[in-house]
Amino acid sequence: MSSNRRIRSARLCGSRDEAQVIDRHGSGTDFRSAIHLSAQQIDRTEHIVRAWEGGPLSHLARLAIPEPDARNGFRFLADGHHFDDLLSIRAYCDSLTGISGADREQDPVVADLVTAGEILFRSERASHTVTPGRICVRDTRASWEFVCAPATRVRVVRVPRDLVFPRTASPGTMNEAYVADVRTPEVRFLLNFLEAVEKSSEDLARSAAAQALALNACTAIFSGMLCARPETAVHDFPDATMAAARNFVQKNLDSGDLSPAMVAQAVGVSLRTLQRSFADSNDTVMAFVRRQRLQRAHADLLRLGSAARISEIAARWQFSDASHFIRHFKSSYGSTPAAYLRNLRGTS
Image (cartoon, rainbow, N blue to C red; front, side, top):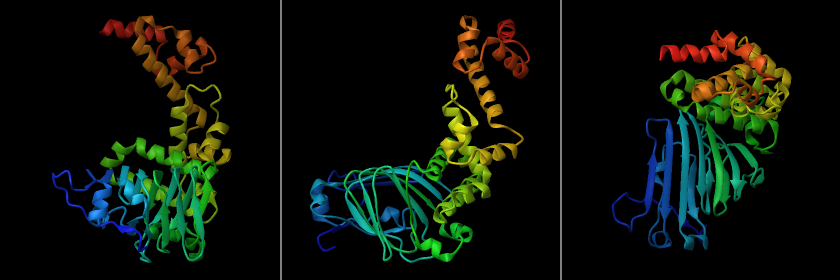
């Protein structure tokens, strides 16, 4: 890499000539990182990203900005969450090369889902080019050289290796990368689970037990991917199925096609697995859907007040007709929608 410019540390001074390197972990749950280097700064000095040393991105080493891309400057932006040992971020990165992993027991298992640009990963045993819409999950104890194309956008997820290893079928499993399309059921499942984790970030920030739950679930999913047995992750950790399914349901409550089969397909599990996950909580998929729709209808009723049209609210939230909606509303709230509004006016 003699033609590359190595990245060394930049001080945070007020001068406009200084490289801008910002790394903030907040309360231990929010993760922010930003690096801005001009071509002149790259040419004049070397910049190692010391903010990454010992942190969530410490598995990256020997970083370099290739020529001639260095002439355009360099930017790295990352935004996401760091819960316990689970890191989940979205990043933008200009042209960069380096090593992912350093043959250490503490090096993590990392997933990179590319949404723009391209990343090449190369080890002694394999080479994978990850293009938009594809994911690469790998054990970084087996070092991987990487080449990141300019203006690459990637979703990065990291979990501890020592939590993944005991779940795998054999030590050899950890030497192989899992590369797949984002439409693959287990990848869809992972993404829906991560969305549910992010949606619960405030709760996770307040609870070490909840953070451990999220970490263990993600670890189980990664283990299943590396073993090429995605159902293993689901069976071992049904709460992950519940979190992903509920998140999907809440985003699609106004869909008339919402069904257990649709939810199972969206989160990448079998219908039987989905139903068993809900049954473990003494619930069913459609009972959960109905409760969520009733909550949305209740919110509409309060917002519209006397202007509310029961039939329109019922149709919006996919109740078969007004009488069907009224019956379920009364069962949950103790009175019909009209009586409920009258009671509210009488107490206000």
